[in-house]
Image (cartoon, rainbow, N blue to C red):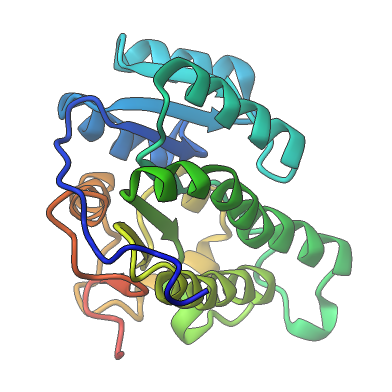
Length: 257
């Protein structure tokens, strides 16, 4: 594959870019979508919750699109990408926020295999499916930004969260591979590894599981949606043109590497 790409980074402005954010109906994805819309980016929210994603797009205004997409279904993903390409001709940004924790507070010998498979299917396989659907457009214009949302648990592992930690470690590995594969193009592929960010996903976890995670954070608090969105905005920005295959820390000091 090496030698088939042009080494250049096409200049790009925020306004007029087209972004896809999976799991964009709420939480991390919705927070980032709000910032990108303010920049003049057209944001397509991909989420399996049809009514919720429509409400989210409506709240963001005319620059937002709602698309009902199950990221584990290649047909859904390809159709949604084709719809955007038919309307705009390009996709510039992909942010993979869609994810689930699965069953938690469970030791490995008691992990339900069906639950493990479901977490891996959404968190890892879904991120690959969406990547494959949009990378062609990015390569064609020699510009793109991909952000895979990983987790600090993918670096360090959280006891009682085997499926989630494993899936996020795999996302980090995928980011390293993809970043290197396309480094000679104008496409930059990175990940972000948040510690606990205060979202609805966290609110449904057992209290002891959340306490276990927050006790490891030197700042002794959860991150905020605003802090995530600000960091993610830079990662997918035109200015972030040299860093690729990297996992950004958003851990309140917890990360040790």
